[in-house]
Image (tube, chains in turn yellow, green):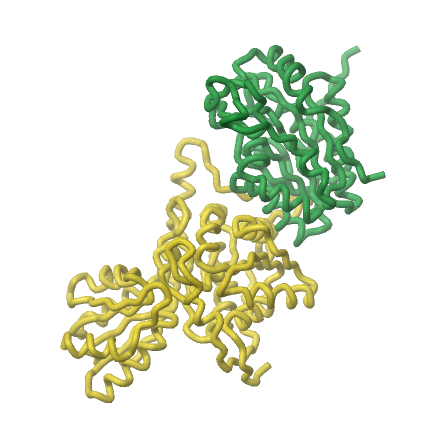
Length: 348
Length: 246
């Protein structure tokens, strides 16, 4: 399929999962990602694969755990309140070192919030989310095309590092329709000799996260931390636009980055040297890219559809060398271009 | 004449952490014997619960997974759906299955997942030190019902197979106990039938086992066996509660 077609972000993500070899999908209805579960209910059966509508998000993530333990590519998708319910399972899977893909088509919170797109699940996504010391790889698409492309990246990374990978999008990205090319991307396979397939001709495999013997859990954690350091060293996806000579650097991801791209262009037309850093992996975070830009920028402005979450990681990267300002909208609000330009002009 | 049974192939030659008189050891052994007799050890995948039996994977010699508390049947569903030709069982306690995991067991049964559940009911939370379980009997004293369980405050004990019976996805439901050799022989027959149900791809099967917990019942092993006979068996009647295998 090399021709461009008009498709929603939710459906593009679902189609990518099918093409990336997802053998089992488990889901539970929640707005604004229902198109995805509905799409999978049809496509997975067409492909003679597994689709189960679970009784809850708790069950869905644990069905994912079981399928992942069996050694197949597996995915669940949900939106913010449902993702909260999945945190228990994700913590276990981090401890178990099981690969899977979880897409969060995020909506406004806290609580039941609303069904508009939001970026207020940043902390939950990049700081672990459940109990215990762990991080999950987090990828943030900004277009329908990227909803498709990054799903392949997510499955490959999950298998490579034996970890759940979060695709953090939002309700706008999930529901908007854009032209996209749904061309199959590269799939990298990794041996899964740890999988539970029946102990025939080998010693039994056990998938567990509990270590009771003295010192055993610390040792297990050290192993996990070693893996997280390795991921940090090897993985960082970031897009930079006109940052080389920029005096003003906008930092935004996902939907907010689309607005900032337009803002940066408009500022250049006004002879203001503006640039944009768009983190694509939110964990690992592009700390080095931001740190380097701090040497020539007058200030940074972080734009989020939240009360200000990623801005904390930006500040850690900038290390107080230059000011880091923030502008955000909450509860489904979208940052306006005019307002962002006004803030920047006032700070210059 | 002395007859030594030896260790089932499906059990590891290790000492378990279970307390003296605990039913888990006997139930593990019966399970292992059945798996040996059916010749399914190499295609069987078990899921251990949160509770005293969490370490079942240290004793049963086969592929096993640990599940978050109560999510055991959901993990089993994930495994079985992608490997329909493997034999999948969950081993769950009363807290795991009938309290925190009620949603999972009911819907796994309702979907008619072709798995087998061994449900160990000892009327108490064992691992956490003897709190009230969903199957704790009325008037029974526990750490969290110091004056005895009163329906007014703590509701009524749940009869799980009877509750699941109405679900069309359930094929075989039975209840036995480990308190006498006679009961153990019947229990083994039930567990074998439950696995047979799965091998024949007929649907969901569950065997509840009334099991003594002398430590938390604060009784000697022998007294705890008597307690199960006198108090649990009348409330939780033994036998095959649903059998659509014929």
